[in-house]
Length: 591
Image 1: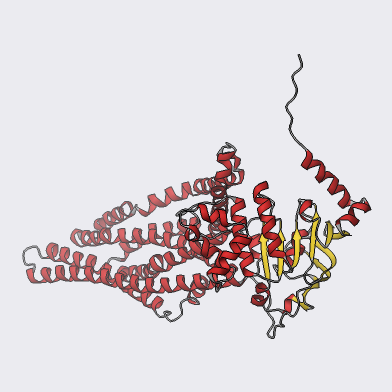
Image 2 (image 1 turned 60 degrees about the horizontal axis):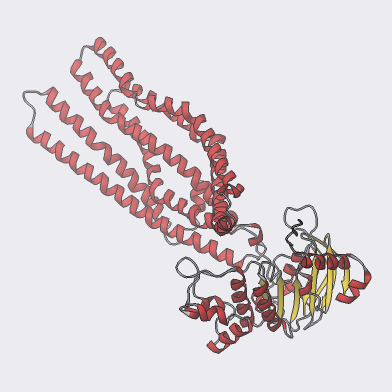
């Protein structure tokens, strides 16, 4: 009921359809049993009055049996129509709410949640709720009505045979409850859904990494995480299957053992009463009707499993929808300047015990460039991503133009900041549309200018459809450096006054790096720039360089000043110079 109440919240305008589906399903179940009663009536008429039976009465029974059978199908079809209409509304609303929520989530959320997991929740989990509402839920009414109808039939027909008929039903339901209900069922369903999400996530990473596997001639086992997720799923399912092996075997035997109980009871009754015809007729009725019980219990088992899946799916969708968004003030302030200030800022990632950055104080004057350098994991990226409010600070504040970023409207904040990351993504659409994401209202002249400044002209010229070339499966593929230059054109087209560069040339070849550096010079001219780089040659011209170590600023100054201090930066510079001079030479052969 808890799962149904949650699903009804998404059933705007169609809440009445779900009770209607249950009512029609219940009527279908009852009318579906009527033909068996009428067949028994025909048999009774033939056996009890073998010489004087009424042809008209038997004909009427036969037509009523056909009519009620057809009516049962019509009622069930109506129930499915109602349930499908309700399910489509639920699925639509759940997808809309989930996508609306995702669009409004802080960018930091996507750092901790993979695209595979999010896709699994929105696509497959919501589809599970549709299947449950549209197909399995109508059977719920039949699962309730069938036992009640059975009790009614027991009181009308032979109660001793009816009670004998109930024995395998009760025992099989107890076994089914053991298999599907309780902590075992819930624990398995949670593990099952977690394993599917893990496999989905690792499969996405595996597919994305196939080019690397081919280039370096690696085997599929180089994707250890994907392989491990498959093994984990396999081991879990096999263990659960073995646990259910004996109960399921016992269940199958008992649910099909009606005759082994009914026949001995009928023989005893005939011996005691001597009324063979009456007992045989009653036995004939229960042999006709009892297979329906078995079918209904099997549907109940599938329904119970579907409820478990739907409950887990709804909970995961709700968890996504209930993710706390960054608070937005009612009366946001406007950005009046583009200088950036960190005032005693500390931050720890959700669930982490250690602070990522601690007591950071820095200022980036309007139009100046500040570079962050340091070892991996030192906190550089965290500092850069607090400016566009990927997360909110735990302590202190980040200001733009003297205004706390928490007091700025998120849309306004995004309009004033451009990003160029090391792993920029292109959408599976045309290059023109990819670039226009930076400024959808830009003219063709603006797009052409951005392409020129980002050094993308030679990319466009060699493509058969130019800017109208599609990216992805149905189009063409670009190298990492080429994608980076297209992303750079997008950022140039946006023309935001603040630019955040996070390892923008990290994975590019020397030729692309040179071209990207030219584009970056155009992008950052006259802008407030926060730059992160491991290649120190790209930061030596920055107005100020900050050395980050274990979440703190340990050194700061110009390139020359830091070199002269012989500190961490000086050591990093010397090591970097040695690394770029390192070459492989062929050993000389001596006679």
